[in-house]
Image (cartoon, rainbow, N blue to C red; front, side, top):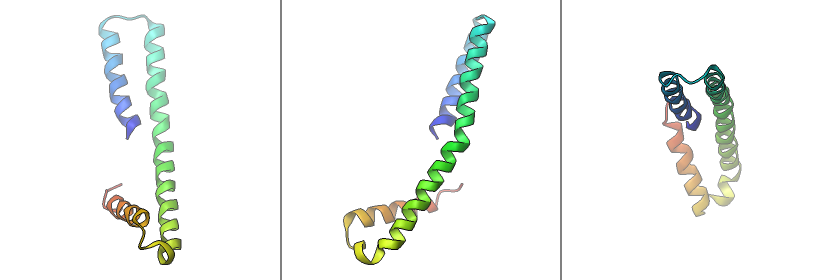
Amino acid sequence: MVYEKEVVIERKRLETMKSQLKDEYELRKQEEVINECLTMIPDSIARTQQAFNDLNTILQETQLELSETEVFQTANTLIQELELIPA
């Protein structure tokens, strides 16, 4: 996820700042940035899971009417691929 990558980047930035002996205010602000990213991860996971569930429901409800359309087939392929990804 994007926020997990951002945490890694921001932690490296914090280590660089510490090695450069930045003042405490700047270090605390950088730690706040990291903590904000960390708090976004569970929310992002929940929203992604909800979007997946919503798409899956829509596909099931419209299968008879739309199963021959390209959009339906693309969405169905995406759902199948995502189901193979471990949580």
